[in-house]
Image (cartoon, rainbow over all chains, first blue to last red; front, side, top):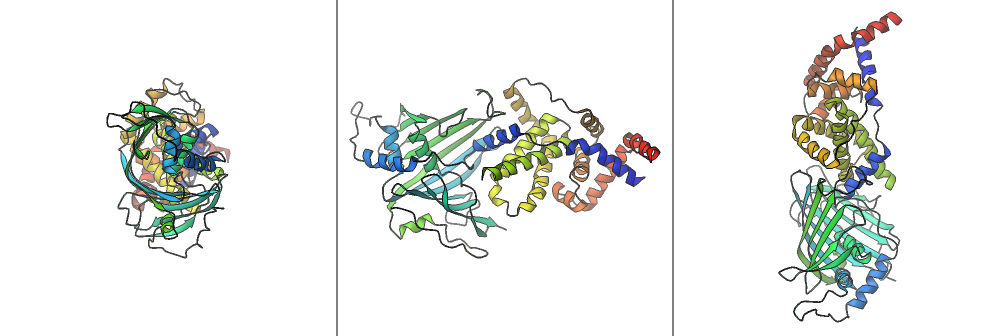
Amino acid sequence: MTDLHDEALRRAFDPLREETATRDEIRATIARRGAERRTRRRRAAAGVIPIAVAVSLIVAFAPIADDDGARPGLAFLPERAEAAIAPAERILELTIRVESTTGTDATEWITAREWSLAGAGQAMQTRRLITEGDLDQPPTDEDFTSIVDRDGRIVDGRAWMPIGDGSRGRIERLDVPASPTLVEMLRDAYERELLRPAGTTADGALRLRGRLRDVKCQRAEVLLDPRTFIPRRIEVVDQLTARPSAPCRDDAPVHREVDRITGARTVPATTENRELLEIGDWPVVGSRLPPPPPLDED
Amino acid sequence: MRDLEERIAERALTVGRRTALGVLGDPEAAADVAQDVAVIALRRRHRIKDPEKLDAWLYRVATRAALRHARGDGRRRRREVDHARGRQEPVEAASELSDLLALLAHLPHQQRAALTLRYVHDLPDAAIAHALGCREGTVRSLLSRGREALRDDLAPTYQARIEHD
């Protein structure tokens, strides 16, 4: 009787086995994930990086026009901002405090540090360290590096991922595109004119508004240091719609992320400094991968 | 590369939906839980060291998400999502599915979870215990009580089977 009862139970539960995800649900989920910063995304259209580097060279020497003699002018602001985060022959290091809230979930805090070096029209080398702890300790989340060619293809990608209690990790080859760094997203947004000048704040910061990525139902605000054009604060709010095609609604639940730049510096791209672009010297279990290829700068 | 993300999302949504539907009995709530599970899976994809262990991880996450939802903090979120989505037509469930959900409706959520993990995902006691975060003895107790509770409801089914055989 027990076997029969078991069989009857299996038959009764059969309708649940037939429940599968639809294409729309898969797309909606990936879109929702896309609303979060640490998501996978294909790189911007081919040619973004070379253009960005060229722009950086042009606007770096362009005079700053003042609107009223007191504040920096907003002419060429996106170009100046782009140049600031793509300095030629220098590695940009940003330390970021990230505050992230989805719907009514508790706010999550992480710290990230990013390094980036633009190749001379050929490639982009980046490293990002994400942790809930100290930046000089093995990260709780990940430490990854990547070299991406001008077509957005990963030339080399690897990540240190914590295992066990997190005191050690394993270095793995990245077989999927890594999340774009903040610098990569900003450069893409500036280049594609997704962000436009929107005046200044009371304390003189330069404001840009628009979107950080080319998606619907997003609003972003970027505040720049008026002297360096390096971002100080970035706020991105994505509405969590049920489907990507659903209309935007002001009363929809949102994912909100605020990035506060707590440290910024550039260093010359010397051989020694380029070690900053490699995974940290964290304890590793298992064999190391071969060293990454050099950044193509020819 | 896109395929990998889609495969993770698809598997997570499917496991999440089946598990949450069994536990909650509400297709819309199950869809919400499934999407939460899938987003977590995508967020943690780098931490999924062994793809063969993905399912075991998903069973655990989906079960706990569904039980958490059942406890109430999910209901609040769902009301807000429903409000944001506006009025939607209720999901039309197939009759056999409706029958099953009606059968399960009067069982405690823990029992529903154990039964779903056993009879939908075919998990052994140890795997169910891992998913529920309890001892195997507790799983056996949950399954036993769940089976017993459904015995009368399902009796006509296996009585017909006996007569057919």
